[in-house]
Amino acid sequence: MLRSHTCGQLNTSDLKKEVTLCGWVHTRRDHGGLIFIDLRDRFGITQIVFDPSHNKDAHAQSEHLGREFVIRIHGHVRNRPEGMLNPKLPTGEIEVIADTLEILSHAETPPIEIDDRNLASEETRLKYRYLDLRRPTMQSHLLLRHKAAQAAREFLSSESFLEIETPLLVKTTPGGARVFKSPSRVHPGKFFSLPESPQIYKQLLMVSGFDRYFQLARCLRDEDLRADRQPEFTQIDLEMSFVDMDDVLSIGEKLVAHIFKKTLGVELPLPFPRMTFHEAMTTYGSDKPDLRFGLEFTEVTDIVKHSDFGVFKSVVDKSGRVFCLKAPGCANFSRGDIEELIEIAKTHKLPGLAWMKAEAGKLESNIAKYFSPAIQQQLLTATAAKDGDLLLFAADQYEKAANGLGQVRLHLGRKLNLIKDGEWKFLWVIDFPMYEWNDDANQWAARHHIFTRPHDDDWDKLESDPGQVRGKLYDIVLNGVELSSGSIRIHRKDMQERVLKVIGLTYEEAAKRFDFLLEAFKYGAPPHGGMAIGFDRLVALMGGQNDIREFIAFPRNKSTENPLDGSPQEWTPEFLKELNLKVDVAKGPK
Image 1 (cartoon, rainbow, N blue to C red):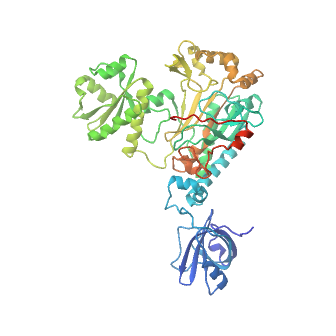
Image 2 (cartoon, rainbow, N blue to C red; image 1 turned 90 degrees about the vertical axis):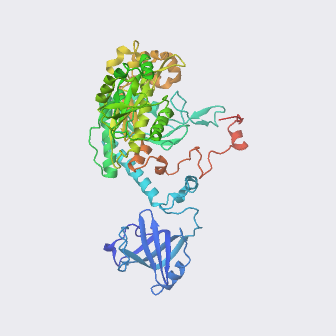
Image 3 (spheres, rainbow, N blue to C red; image 1 turned 120 degrees about the vertical axis):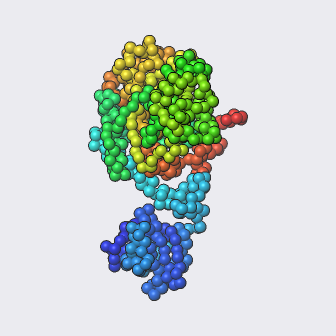
């Protein structure tokens, strides 16, 4: 080894010890003869002293050091002088007096600061990502990611799961996301798909008898980006045989709890609370509710249908719903504040937002005249509203009304400073609907993949009332973010035929799309189910952020480009010839 210790390792127990350190020059300070270097590696910083009275050659060399030079020094450890201690550093009580200096690599002045206090622009950080990753914050992010991955492997291995890789060059099967294509040189005109998830292959592993599988799987999706989405990302993917929903939920929450304990030292209370999809939507307006604050909804459909307010009555007549959100103490909101809330509702597909203020034991607004004193009293009682509270109403079809008001709720949670940092509010959301009505196709469509098993109590509704059929589906939600999704799968042909018939698909038609999976099921498939945890999202939330790019070594920008390597790139004629391809790019709007 070129070094005996790291730059974050030495302390007063090492006094007078001879050491050799390697690293990058973080700062250089010339104090009129004495030259001080902060030497940095990923473990920390150690102060190095070059004293001409101790060693002239080493001191002379140090005069030519610049930022980010890579050096090796040999010397011995001593106490820092009185008044020069740095309690912020683990090495802040000692320094190393240099005997020799070797410059391992010169460095030009870096285009960005290697400093957490002065961040460059996002594009510059991505272009010079190898420099950005030298920052202590970024190195701590990737260390957190490493620890979380190791903890996941440790737990799943202890539960008899086998880590098995699945292919990255696969056949396209119908799914919910756009996939990337890779041309085959050996088979001209044919393409591989890059997998959006290992879904089918992990089910095949259950048919293969492996019983418990997991993988930190790389997934690729050709989708528009946002802070918590990248075209390539990582899942903690797992599948289990001979299980039902409770078994998978138990493993999933214990896995997350183990990761938190090993990585952050945080003990999560188990089991996680459970909430049905219907409860989550009706109470919080979201299938991934943030439970760090209240502001629960009250459904007031049965009250307002007796009012004279035409908007509400029209919605109720069309089997819609009316939800009310009480904003405590917000009756003093200005017209501008209320207009802001209305615009949020409109952004999320509601036609608007009705409101009334509780004052002197009654409701006041430009629509209050349409509500009799008796109905106003019913609203005050149902919502437990007091003088000074603001009532906000959303009226539309069930999910549309709930979702729009849910976005208003989230905005109010932030505006009113109701969200406390450092809280971990987990829950399972279960019993998602199996189907949704497609107006364009005038038929039922699967809300999730077609191999999801219906709830045991809902098989008799498949043909008569598909909209009421619940799937054995489940998500882990943390602080309003969906961390995972999963389901119990269908493993029998008779079950599959009934589920497919609802969406107008025959088993034979499905077999053409998923031929190799359904072929495998012919030879004895066990009951099975699984889940996938978004690893990048999990680590980002553990690190106190929402942007997963801060926890990925080499992410892409919002246009899916990589400023570091210039990808995606145009293909040269030589590449195209080798692959027997011709490119004819269609011109026009994207």
